[in-house]
Length: 360
Image (cartoon, rainbow, N blue to C red):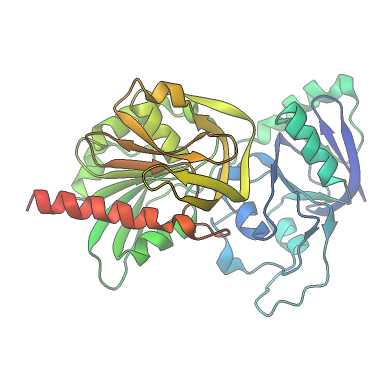
């Protein structure tokens, strides 16, 4: 069965349907440069409502192990690949990628030139796209996109959950904007009990849980789409140590008076160099974001830049000059990706330890 990917500028790619073969999709088309980790990317809530392209040409080689999912449900709109591997030999696999996407009701398209698509996005910027079963005429794109866009209401799972290691040193309240399970696992490895709350939770409810620290998660969308969260973050950072990752990093920047902006085509992959300004060391990181903090705007705040991206010098880390608040744009938990940045979780624990000692 043929499938058609049509971009907003009229560029069209024709391929073969897989996954939920008859389903249609619309959304922002983005690309991920990772050579592995397709399952973790597909189930990363930060890809909510996006058409996810993998630049590595061979996808599906080791199948799907449901224990590796980063969220209860995949929330991307579609998966775009060069070649779907149907010969799976990995000893841990439970499903093929094709069967997994069919069960998740997510359409896929294979057999297209993902290199050409990626280069097109890099030159022209991220844009809207439609995945359809019939060719889409340029004159019909806007009206069809409007119809299909009504289904862009998938949201990450937002509900209260609690996680407890055998011996907990500290209690962390995690505000869930679209959390990856690997972040929770890293906090548990630091011997922290974790209570996950929807990001709409009020200050009184959080305070009643008596947390030692607050963690602001990753998630989808433009950070300026969450204006109601900024007063809460402002209040929390004056009472508790606070850490943020990705969207959480951007929201903490906004809450402190900085600004954000859309990148031309985002950072999505596992090979992004980040320079840590305090040490001068460069680490390799996993990233997944389409927005960044405006470096010039940080100078007008009580924040300082602690890390920058090695390729384009965008802001990758922030710290408050007076309050125990830290954040990073990259994903220190990896899954998949390099483990260089996992020290961030230790730094957060150290902030909580220092705060507890001061109030002892």
